[in-house]
Image (cartoon, rainbow, N blue to C red; front, side, top):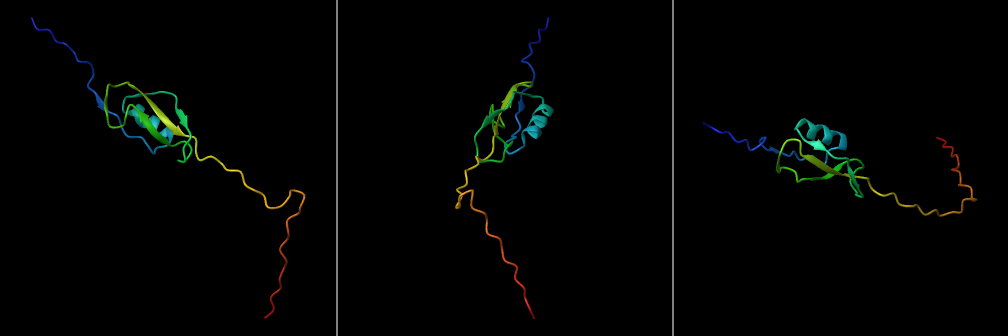
Length: 101
């Protein structure tokens, strides 16, 4: 009698999706056979919506259908702008100049 023991599905390499937009990264990971957790949003100077890291790490061997967590940039923070003149002050208008030849 022969008994066969399965070690489960063969592991697959987790694609590197850093730098992809979140929607593109999800499509690539699902196409490779992985599940994707809801995004973890993080403050970053990267463009809003870009994947900046993944867990487990990219290029590691994982079982098919492993759930991958992506860290996604919220984009650069906006800075307040200092105004030089009070709000009640009207802006100066440019003068029209005539040029004669």
